Amino acid sequence: MPDISALLHQHFDFREFRPGQREVIDELLTQGRALAVFPTGGGKSLCYQLPALALEGTTLVVSPLIALMKDQIDFLRSRGIMAARLDSSLDAGETREVNDSLRNGTLKLLYVAPERFNNERFLDNLKRANISLFAVDEAHCISEWGHNFRPDYLKLAQFARDLNVPRILALTATATPQVAQSICDGFEIPPQASVNTGFYRPNLKFCLTPARGNKRRDLLLSRLQKRAAGSGIVYVTLQKTAEKLAAFLEANGIEARAYHAGLEAENRHEIQNWWMESDARIVVATIAFGMGIDKSDVRYVYHFNLPKGLESYSQEIGRAGRDGASSTVELLACPDDVPTLENFVYGDTPTRESLTALVEHILSLGEEFAVNAYAMSQQFDVRQLVLKTTLTYLELTGVLRQGTPFYAAYEVRPIPNLPAMYSAFSEKAAIFLREVMATASVGRIWHKIDPEIAVEKLGTKREHIVRAMELLEEKSVAEVRAADARSRYHRLNAEEDAQAIVDDLVERFSRRESAEIARIQDVLNLVEHAGCQTNALVGYFGEIREQPCGHCSFCATGKVAKLPPQRTLPPLESSIDADEVGELRAQYNAALGQPRQLARFLCGISSPAQSKARIGRHALFGKLEPYRFGEVLAWCEGI
Image (cartoon, rainbow, N blue to C red; front, side):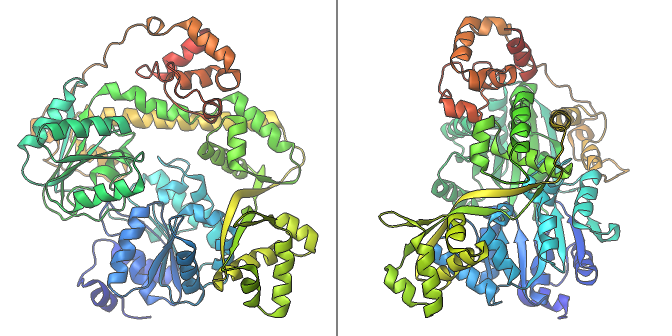
């Protein structure tokens, strides 16, 4: 094993490790398992980049952050380290090049999103590669008790076992003790290999400022006009708020741009570069901005809207002052934001009726079946992520077991033509390829192959068809693209009580809904905390500090903050025409028939059934957005 300290200096020009890094790397190299809980900017990435250089084979890095992938790959390549990513933005030639370097062992680090493991060709490639280390960033997503549970993450531990990976590293910046235990349980990490460096940041001036909704914009402008030079981020909840607030700041002499998921990728990239190039510009952004971006001199992070929980808040303010210099983070806390945040939560809770129909359908499919997530989402009016969560819950409770995901179709474009494509292979292989291509439906350019049809007609195995598709790309004689992703499932028990399954799912979603609503209240409680607010925040993550920080709002004033009352709205009944709602409901019963469906619509929360009915532009959509979801739901149940 090469000397780790020597590699640190040779490749990264560092003489010393940051806190926790050496401990994590030692556990990883000696025990084969480790969890790194470091604050944002605490140097988590080095914990897999350095071992990747010391180990034979390829380190596989799983991350949902494309920006992080691109930045780290650029950095590693600038230092002569072979690193690459696989994602949908790559063309066929780029994808082929990455897969070639994975197979021949020249690739040191490969970055992928967790969804990539739903690709059977990718899994097949991994089985033939030498994966020395499996690193999972944002590992808190594995925990159903965490703030950002993602079903695809829960499968990663099993994929690592299936691939027989010798080393696993989990990394996160936001883990309560309960979530950290979930991560360790999932990835079989022993307690002594869990390294937590703490969440306290002495260089952050931590301001929690109660603010009225109609005063907030001017208060933010005043802060920005009076601040010393330095770049900053202003976080908002909605895309429309980002646009309006950025325009307001620009009109008042502040260099500001809006950044959100509704912008084209090229525009987002241009805005990010514009912000990175200056030490005085402001980005008004939804929560996606800043994740994985390596800018150490952010001097200000303002929250114009309430964050959705203390985990999100801790991660977002952690983007300030990564260089250790004094920085300001300020939350303009207004209870008027609560209904909007709650609506996001309620929008992800399926109705009992949808769950009942979904479960009955699944139980009718037999012992083995495949799922088209998009079609099933539309059929049962359940968002695709919620559908994935539902299927994951059914796995956790022993109703289902997922098999290897697959594609229902492959599309092939010969380069430059079919004869040339066949000539690249031996006579025996060319005959097989001709037989496969003969099963295809032929378009003007693309040949569409259904593997199941090919298997049945040729009497061969599916893996032989998939391997043939890979060889076409490897030899650069065809462009191949997969289509129609499916997930394969097995029923584990022929006799299931459908009602008991639905009851369990309803209880799980209800518990999750309550937990997310409580997270919003945790933020409000922190603002009005009677004591050091910094200590209260880090205490939420299990870090106990005895001495007051001296740089939070309470320590600075000695006073307990008081939030203003939520704005007074007119009675709900006076804000909407019940007859008009009833007529629309009768017209679109499949999308609005259930009270929760109707409440979502009136609160401006979209759903698959609404999209299918094309009523998102109706004047009543979002009509009751300022009201709390529970109040709207109660009204819908009464009409």
